[in-house]
Image (tube, rainbow, N blue to C red; front, side):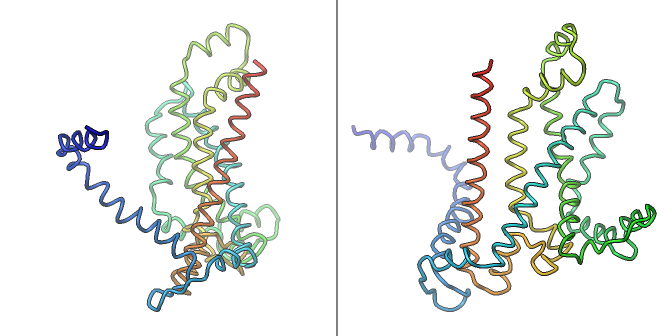
Length: 302
């Protein structure tokens, strides 16, 4: 009996198992795998959704490299990514440290309240943030006026339009990562802290020498997840600024949406989607390389 026949025989004997798990694979092939292949094929064509599909080779990819709107969206999305990583990770680490303290009471209530921004509808919160950043009646401008400063047109300024988007993104996502980091902190062996305390290490030294190294895999997971979410950001800029003024707050997914669902350039929209995929692969690979290199240096130094 050949290996193929043996494999088919085992599959036939386990046919009921495959039958029960088949719905997942059927839905995956129909709604994920096939659209993935279709979009890749479509990125080399032009199609408006109704007319004939015209092959264009690499023209869509070459167009992106010299399209000012795409380059602006890429630059804006990079700013969102860097700002989110720089703000969310430290804030989440700080909040998790507070919730992990033994002196804090009603921890369950604090965790529940803190998680509300993440489960609240982004569109509804975005409408509230529009009022908060309003030039005439927004709370942020009232605060500036009370400090003797000039009120700003947060949502209508080329220079400032990214700030409300970053604030909303950080406010909404930070609690989720704080809870992830908190779960990692609670898994650290308390005997490590007791031994360090006996050796005379203060709170900051224990935090830097025990907590941060123990949380390294979790922090790396948070950074990768934040990076992916930042490059896929859509709702926040769409609700707050619609990508404007001009293209000052336009994200890559908004650029994809405009080409695909407003201009009906489905081939170009597919190209943007695959360009975004390549960018995420490069960013993730670079972060993994840096993490492994940092780990190798730490092992060499130890």
